[in-house]
Image (cartoon, rainbow, N blue to C red; front, top):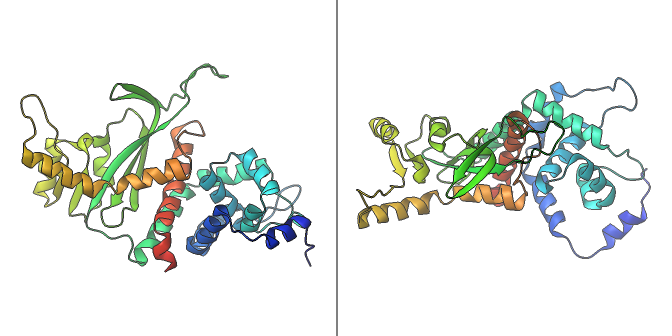
Length: 316
C-alpha cells in the first residue's frame, strides 16, 4: 500500500482545477496510448544491464509527451517531476514509493525514439486514429511552411554554426535555422504530411511531397506560385488554389484580388497548426544539433498538435 504524502493530501483537498490539470486530463483521454506503446515496446529494454531496472514504458512515454507540451529540457523535466504533483500523477509516479527518472534516463528514451525513427510512426498512428474517427478526410490539401530558429552564434566549442542549418531571407530580414513544411487537410486543418529541411530550401520544392495522391485541390500562399506545377496540377484534374502574385507588368485585377481573398480564407486554417506549436507548446527554436534529431521532435509535435486541435471532437 502506498503511503500518502502531505503534498498529495494538499493536492487532493485544493478546490480549483488548474489549466495544466485540465489539459493533462484531456490528453489522457485523446492520446491513443495502447497503439503508441505497441510501436515502441519491441525496441524498449525489458531489463537493465546494470543498476536499477528500466522505468515502465508507459511512464517514459508520458514524460516524453510532457516535455513536448511544456518545452522542457531533460534536466528541467526531471526537476518538474519532483516539483509538480499534477505531472507526477500524469506519469503515474509517487514521490514516496517510486524512483524518479533522472535526466540521463529521459535523454536515453529520446535517443531510442530517434534511433528507430519511432516519432514518425507515432505521428502516423495518431493520424490513423483521427482518420478512423472521420476527422482526417481526403480531398484537398493546404500547404505552408514556417522557420524554426537555430543559434547563429559561433561562440561554442566548435566555433562554428550548425552545418545542417542554413540562413534565408524573408522580406528584409535574415533568419538562420530550419524550415518545417506541412500539408494539412483542407476540411479539418489537421496535418497529414510533414517535411523538415534547412531554412534555405524553397517552399515550392517541397510541394510535391506534401500533396496526397487522391487530393483534388491544393491551396497555398504566394510562395507556391509556379506556372509549371500549375499546368501539371490542372492536367491531372487538381484545383490550383495558390494565391496570385502581382508584378510591375501585370498588376492584380479586382477579380484576382477577390480570388486571393477567397483562397486566403480557405488556407488560413493551416496557420492554427503553427500557432499551437509555437505559442501553445513553445517550440520556436531548435533544441538539438542536426536536422534528423530536430525532425524527430517535429513529428512528435505535429502528432500532438493534431490531437490538441481535434480534442473536443475526440472526447464527444
